[in-house]
Image (cartoon, rainbow, N blue to C red; front, side, top):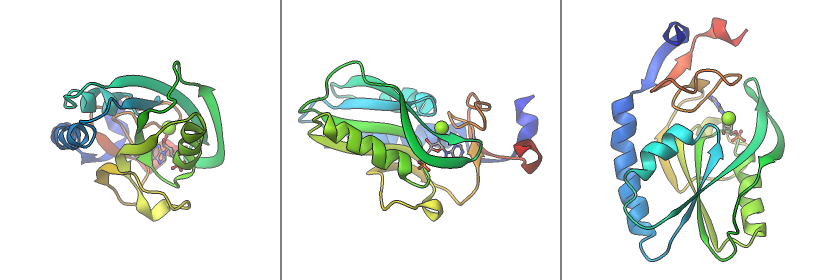
Length: 178
Ligand code: IMP
Ligand code: MG
């Protein structure tokens, strides 16, 4: 069972839903005069994006992008595009949906890339924020939960592609890193 590898549940499914309702309401209000393109960064953002958009009640478009920077638990800092956008974002307001802002390297690269594609504005909505680990001075405009410096899994977050399907955010047992 996947659950056997979980040391502790950090954020419950109920807490995530409650926070998504609040964020969705805020985003709907902030973007009421435009049609934002909501870009999910694959694959970690999928459960969060699915939950969040239920509570966004304005017109919006959905897109997905896949970039990689991680191997195991460490960011390599070298961000590669694995899957690019399907349509133009020139002149549009973009909201990136991400699972976690850690060092900030991924988001910096992705924001630069989206501006270079002509986006009018680029903001970030991240389920989690781990400020203790930040290397690049970057901040998500919308944050679900600020967490301590621990490696977390679940609700989209993985360790070597595993645990994404857990319905909560938890801390992985140390013995599972090996
Ligand atoms: P950054 O470029 O260091 O900010 O890394 C962002 C990416 O690293 C996220 O999209 C996650 O995929 C991954 N990541 C960072 N911290 C964790 C964690 O605690 N658990 C799982 N993945 C993480
Ligand atoms: Mg990831």
